[in-house]
Length: 374
Image (cartoon, rainbow, N blue to C red):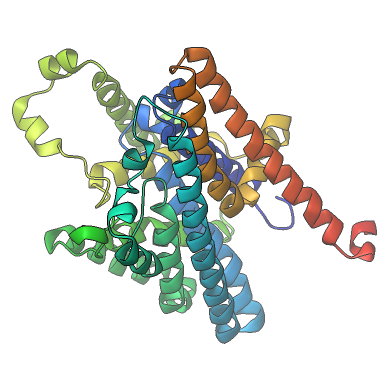
């Protein structure tokens, strides 16, 4: 760890940002290698879980050092910054999409991005934007994070003292939300794509994991193959991976999937964070943590670039949101040629890495001279 910061957390946040960008570019061939292709969960679960982990780790230290009130002020200030970023990001995104759409003849990017509502109801759309109800494609994670951060002061003191109680209440809310159809309103009578009543569980679990990770304990010495939880989690990952792969070949899927089992499994809701998605992510997180207990591999150059993006996840996420329609425009102008699709996907990640490197360099320049010498 560096200054008490686990580089693995930054690495996986950066990896999630790459996956999110690739998944947001239509017909991107590299999107075939993201998490959503090998199981029920995707990069969104990583993003929310690690957001909770980082938030509780950071503001928990503030509580212990400066007190609860100071932590609340800092949390609310951060939420306000995110809210302002959301407003400006949406304005920039609309401008880029309208520009890109004027250069694409084969499809309507405005319709694909969910911006038609702004053209038909501009006044209501502006009001909905301020109330976090107008969320075009690519914009859903940021309002969710804002709301989860606003709720953090309500649970942070108990989370630091009795995390199991907070997790228990969070599980109850998660189970009741789909049963009673609890969600927040969106534009045109819709609801939030990421139901905060359900997704709050991942945020809380991330915070609980951060607290648990700071407690000293002895690592298990038994071989992994003899640990029942590891074996069960691995088996679930393999089964869900095979099922996810079968979706690419509907005939194969229909031939091997019993009808009654299919009716029980589907739909695997992303909005309400289906238990299958939640279990898949938790199994993936557990297996990954057990297989990569050391941080030595994070010193590799490629891992360091990914971790640097994770350290500036807000800026890099926003930049990736703006790059996605531009990459789509380039692909459309080239008639979606494979070479251009690969080029735009790699170029987008390279620009995201460049932004993180610039932010890191700028941060070092801003440090006091005595700190830089030390």
